[in-house]
Length: 363
Image (cartoon, rainbow, N blue to C red; front, side, top):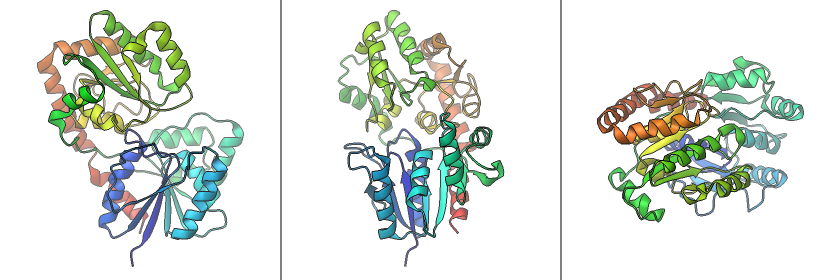
């Protein structure tokens, strides 16, 4: 009889944490596990890309009330009776701890993002709920942050499991043409730029809108596609309306077009430092899309300036526009850069380096 494992994740949006989970579940299946994934906030009509043998459970039922998600998750756990429950982000981790109160089962939690600073009560609750849980993070700076801001008892309780390089998008050669059709962009010479970020102030999406406006001013037919979700969306819409950038900046939420966009764009922009070794930046480099990224802790392993990517200073809006102009005007150096980025990615973040530590935890 197969051993059963239940993963719990906030969303199946493939431009976020769920892509690494997809890579992991594909390998866990080969070890004979019965794999289930519970999703707290599924996206409508989302193509999740998981193997067909993975059973997906919808916990949301179109409500954001945590108590409802917690109760539904508890019933799902009682019905499935898994050996291991593995949560895949902080929100899912806290829900799992509430849902498994009084149960005897192994709990593992993975964090791939630096959590926002929360009120003291939230940090104390996180510390209490993570006791008795094996915690993994994709980068040491997340463990340092959790320890510094009192989310965990001791930093030595965490295991570092690096993110893995994603495979290239299938059908890469036709991605741009398909993207233009799906986005209803009529000009085949349009400059299409993709960015993935939560709609929150700390991801600095306004920097990218400003940079797109600058490119638009110098006669580029630019289209900036921003995929994400979050509370800042209404304010971003107001900002775009006032600056007339709504004509060429598209806030696409968690659209299933994200993987196509990461393959069919001319440039990928990364504006923040909240996600160390971000999967979305890896996806762009795997697809040989030139990337312009803020350089700092967490991106410095992927962003080697003018070797694997073009680096910007944090908050330097004009540098996104300047290096994008370089990409368009310097074709041969850019081709060399994306080739080097692809090789560096495959050598530095192999799949086994992520898979093997998790399989060891499941023993």
